[in-house]
Image (cartoon, rainbow, N blue to C red; front, side):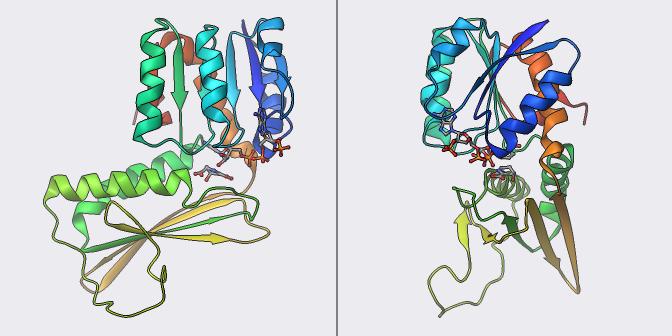
Length: 247
Ligand SMILES: NC(=O)C1=CN([C@@H]2O[C@H](COP(=O)(O)OP(=O)(O)OC[C@H]3O[C@@H](n4cnc5c(N)ncnc54)[C@H](OP(=O)(O)O)[C@@H]3O)[C@@H](O)[C@H]2O)C=CC1
Ligand SMILES: O=C(O)C1=N[C@H](C(=O)O)C[C@H](O)C1
């Protein structure tokens, strides 16, 4: 039986996670923490693991506290670059036995979308990513899109792919999207959307579009519960839900 604290408990995903933990066998919802609540609640309520769906600006301070107090963490909050991951690894080196699992996306469909995109990447001349989200999202591009772009870029580098064709020589700033390791990423924000992504591949006389849609935030909770059930057995840093799946 693991006692779970949820950080960002009143947020869009955090509230869905609280409900899922509350109903899950073998997990107890021990603490619900949101903005302006003290992290000491986690210690007072003897949380053994936390789930963090807060904000990129606060997630590092949350994790520093948890690791220092020997609390495992399952993290959905975005904003993890190489510097942040290196800092986390340093903290974890000083806290043997503590596990932190970060996933840019906890939905099974998104994990498969990233995997399929990486598989297709060396086989097409062109690839661009379009991510579409609700307008209350703080970060652009999304963590999922950034991760997909890096996986695609790595697959193309490994295969020795030629540069993508693109004759653009004039245009408005940002019209061609953000450049993530040479892969163009376009971010759409619109009311009504939840979380969606298309990876568009182009080859001679054909295109392939790999698309994933999270239609409801319940899409993230099975992955979060699976991570909670395994994080205590994975000391150190794990990045990506795919590490828990037999793909
Ligand atoms: N990896 C994944 O599968 C997914 C990741 N995400 C990511 O998760 C994060 C949260 O997303 P979402 O739920 O949509 O956002 P919300 O804004 O709906 O929820 C975040 C919650 O955290 C609260 N909060 C802010 N600061 C703190 C703090 N220091 N301690 C505790 N709680 C705090 C916010 O309060 P207030 O509003 O008052 O600031 C809010 O209630 C984002 O980074 C998002 O990109 C989202 C979906 C899936
Ligand atoms: O903010 C969101 O909503 C989401 N954030 C994550 C991201 O940035 O990739 C995961 C999913 O796209 C939903």
